[in-house]
Image 1 (cartoon, rainbow, N blue to C red):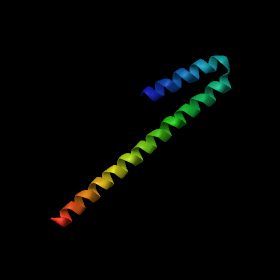
Image 2: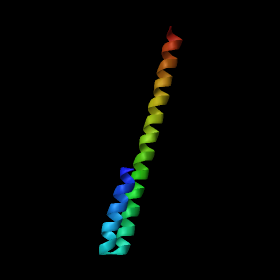
Image 3: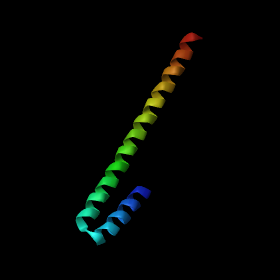
Image 4: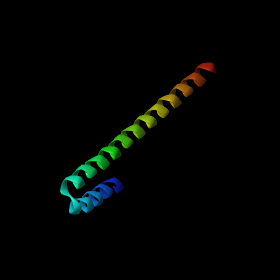
Length: 62
């Protein structure tokens, strides 16, 4: 929600200066938020797989 608000405010403010600059910067911010979200999701999935692997290894030892 904060990312969307930031994109709208940045795009609106820069749109008053130069419309093409506002559209381009809003697109860049939105793309950055999307990429950071995807990286965070991949990291969470990797941690979950690692935790499952550790649990499986502990169960096999006992």
